Image (cartoon, rainbow, N blue to C red; front, top):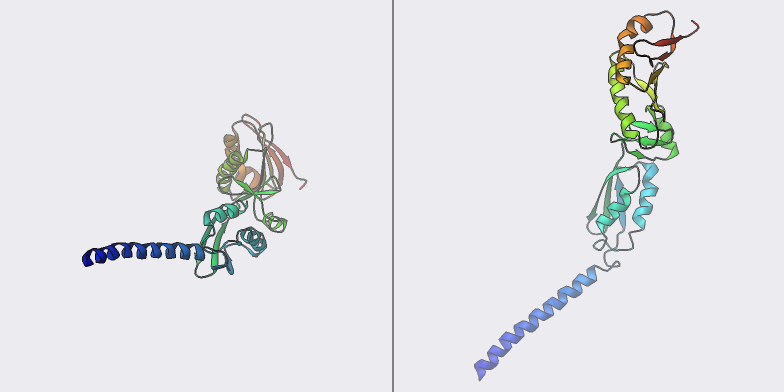
Length: 238
């Protein structure tokens, strides 16, 4: 009888202890996941220019009502990534009350149609007017119909490779809606390429540039290469 009672308490005593431990762990888990237990008191943003700090902080603030452990990091990352100037973002928790947000911003390679920027994947994005105006002094201007960004960027790169052999580069390139190409070089020279054989036509210009244009006493204002085998040149007054 004594042995039976002993076995009973050993068996059910252990079960009660296990149940108490489980209830304790559940209560502890629930407790620490309450926002007021581990609130986020500090947000550190790195990689974003000071101009963008307020914009990023506004996005983050909308998610700070939750605690450090209950914050959905992926959801916050997705929201920050929706900002057009953000290329990549990483968010991590730092115990006990901090959030670290590291942002990699888009790297513009050109201005697109005067009002947006273009990255090296031919994707457009927007920056504040104050920063956009600063890029107009250093970045080339690319223009074209909607959806032609990749095509224009590709030919900009191809044309520049040819022009670099004569120490020139493109300041502005325009693709018209009728597929007509126009260039403005960094020396101010305007080039009309037309619609067909545009690389071949620019090669023709490059081949004669040093002898006809660089060595000449007159300065060319514009060159029309929209001919099968020749070109028309508009010369300056001097």
